[in-house]
Image 1 (tube, rainbow, N blue to C red):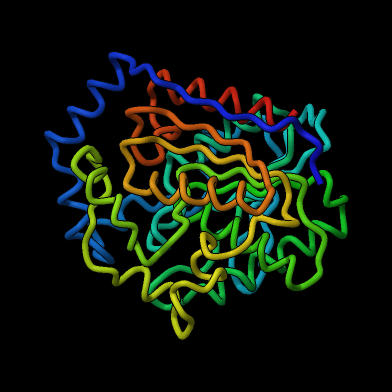
Image 2 (image 1 turned 180 degrees about the vertical axis):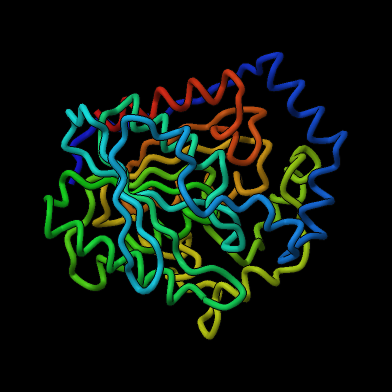
Length: 303
């Protein structure tokens, strides 16, 4: 388990670049487009399932199959860190990796000199939570054969954060050693999307819509949507690796992030909590100053 000092960080300023970015998102009406695209080919054009070579110069990449899906391991030539980040990408369990995910991984490699293992987990609508957790656990067990759990960090953005936290909670029930840390970026903690506070935030959120719950239901498959294996908000924060959660107040998922923080504290667990006022969903993936600040905080966590 990590012995890091617990952090509560609240960023309250908004850069000019962020204000412009907000305005652009509203003008292009991305919120409406996301609500209406779903599983369409137009939406899937954002998929970049293989690492772009131009982002990974001087990086040694190995690819192996786990449960018939790709697992990419990136090792910097000057690998000076013992840390191995197990990364789960976001995309509502519909999208594969996107260019911005690969860009984030590339930056992690350069700034931390650690190893990153990225999982091309099975997606909707063909597969539910079960296959994703099965693959995540299989990859983690393989990693444990090569390094100690104390060197492993789970990281995920959005739905990838859902998977990272649910997997960590599952490891507790399976009596498998925890990773040292779990870093959650704008995590999707409750697929029921039932928090009434989301309505007020939705007026400020220029990206994520509140619509029907088709994706959440498909993710749950034959399991209750409030089961922690589907929605980790309903699981316990006890006996997990050190949790660090990054969230923005203009993200409809922010109320659930706050709810999880409070729940953890009520369980006697202090998490590292980073809340950025005015920031949208997954802001860390975008070229704005606030993303650079959050990224530096992640780098510090990985030292």
